[in-house]
Every structure is written in structure tokens, then in C-alpha cells.
Image 1 (tube, protein in one colour):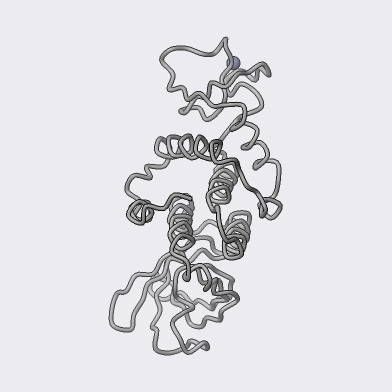
Image 2 (cartoon, helix red, strand yellow):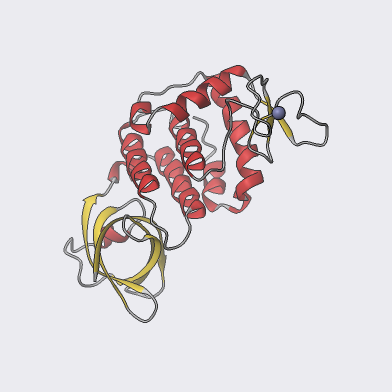
Length: 248
Ligand SMILES: [Zn+2]
């Protein structure tokens, strides 16, 4: 038996009363766990198994798979489900998080980042994209995937312009630049915003608002960057955002 806090990233119905949830746990990292919805749940509802649920779970390992023996809500983030935009963006973040997490690998930093993120979005009433971008940037940095903005990613030269190498994940100086590179030209305003995000904890970004033009540029850049590194094209939640034609 192990007791741990966790956030439900995904739920799959596998039978009338049977669910498999992908759970991001504090102690075990990302795991899949089965559960029967009809018993063992103190809350008497299956809300504890819904995506976005943040709870305390008691797990035991059966034949190779975890089972949820008991679950108790810490926070349901129910307000996220009451607003279609919040819901769509948060669904995307859950899917994004599921993609970047390795199985069974503890990651307290990302766990806390996700809890903080959900809290901020739940309490925010408009302009969600700056927080979405902040979450992506912070998690990519944590995983060492992005981006070097203070010096040339190749040689460390401090004299850098705005040419960003998509493959190498950082700004590139004049000497290292060549025509065969996949270059994305950033603007100084994007670099400034990204540095601000990098240098502040997400809780301090709660009130972050970014100029419409700058966020548009940042959206385009992040899309391009993530497509190259994470194969986001196949993500269901992105189709959902597009289908709702959300523009924030
Ligand atoms: Zn260089």
C-alpha cells in the first residue's frame, strides 16, 4: 500500500464500473491505475477519478498494475469545468503534461507546477494564454529542452541577436549561424517576455498579462517549437481548442 497525492491526467472507461486513470502522483510520478467506481470511495462519487481532480490516493499493486483502493479530494478544480475556454486549455495542459512525463519517474517540480497552474487558471477570468505559455516554457526548461536565451546555444558567445535555432533550442550568434539551420527570428519583446517567465516562479506570474501582439508572436513561436520537439499534431485537446475556435 502506498498513499500519495495525485492529479488525474486522463480517465479511460474500461467497463461499466471500471476505470483506468492516468495519475500524476507526487511519490511515484506518472502511473496508470485501475479503479472500480462503485466502492472504496469516501466521496461516494467518482469525481475523484475525473481529470483535474487533485486528491489523496491509496494505491496497491496487483498483478503488475496499480489499483486505487481509496481516494479523497483535496481540490476538485470544479470551476475549470464550468468555463469552456478554461476547460479546453486545461485539457491541453493535462495532455501536454502526460506527453512530457516519463512513466514511474518522480518529479516534484512538475507536480507543484501543475497544481499551481490549475489554481491560477481556476481563479483567472480572462486571457489564459500567457499562463499556458508560462507553463510550457517552465516545464521545458525543467526538462532541459528549451531555451537558451542569454548566450549562443552553440558557443556561449554573449553577443547574440534574435536568430533562434529550433533544433538546438537557443539563440545563435553570427559566427555560428549558417543557412542550413532551421532558424526562427524572435523579436526582442518575445525574448524579454520569455526571460521574465523563466526568472519568476509561476505563482508570481498569476497577474501576468502580455500585450496582444506579443502573445500572438509567442504563440506562433511556441507552436513551431513544440511541433518540432514534441509531435503535438496528434493531440486531441488541440483539435478541441480549434473546434471551439477559441481566441483568447
Ligand atoms: Zn555561437
